[in-house]
Amino acid sequence: MLGSHMEVTPVLEPCGDADHPDCGIRDVLDRIGDKWSVLVIVELASGTRRFRELQRAIDGISQRMLTLTVRRLERDGLVTRTVYPTVPTQVTYELTERGSSLTLLVKQLADWSLEHKDAIGTSRELYDLQNPEQTIR
Amino acid sequence: MLGSHMEVTPVLEPCGDADHPDCGIRDVLDRIGDKWSVLVIVELASGTRRFRELQRAIDGISQRMLTLTVRRLERDGLVTRTVYPTVPTQVTYELTERGSSLTLLVKQLADWSLEHKDAIGTSRELYDLQNPEQTIR
DNA sequence: CCGGATCCACCAGGATACTG
DNA sequence: CAGTATCCTGGTGGATCCGG
Image (tube, rainbow over all chains, first blue to last red; front, side):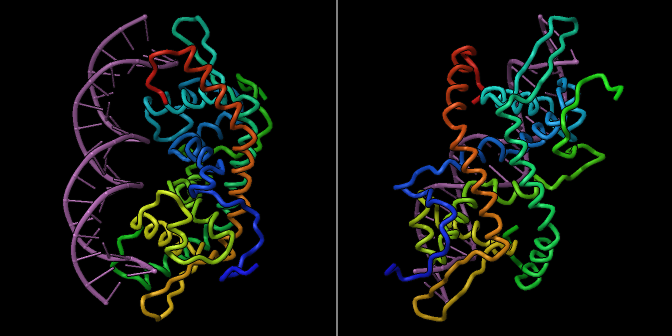
């Protein structure tokens, strides 16, 4: 304990430097940090959905991005894709158990956000007021 | 309960559509879903850090991105920035209480990732094997 | 040491048209 | 209905140089 600065309770392991190149956090964020993945997961958390149902449920998502998003989730084993040989084609998506375990995390995120949303908004207004002509955003 | 498909326990509220435009999850992800924010938060979770210390601790981050990242965190009230009128300038960054509350979330993310990392890797290999010539990633 | 200012490359993601 | 194929643009982030 001869360090030059105060250390606090190390709830988190160091990561991100050359010695500890990967604490795993970036993995999750690369998976759910994109624009649509969480919304798909949230929707599927309510039950099995067809392609069109997902697209209608998620406002603003393009056909292309829904396809890409759902493919990646399938590749990671977070959702299953079931094709029924009907005509026209019918495809359903469902969370796997692994995917369901993610919904718990997502709920934590949502709770934290709702809890601090207002305060953060206030902080931003104050910051922008005290720092005019800033390009931060 | 006359719906056409099975519903599961609604641990998560619906969100993302026009009726429920915002469940708040995107807010958090816009804040910590970027390339560097979490790493900065993780590093600051161990204690106060100077600008150079942060840059050395976080492998690969450019000066510009560290500045931008830390500014955004400051704007949101997640870190405090303290300037000491020495020469050359000395600046320290520290997590606020709000920022510290985020480290709990980040830890959940890291735990989930480490727990499922291997299985996801296996799923991907299997998927890529069964679906050659794919542009998914 | 701590940045700000510029320039630039890349790619996530939108729009559109077409197919089984 | 459930995609695939193309084209195109805005923004993220890297590299570099400069200044207090």
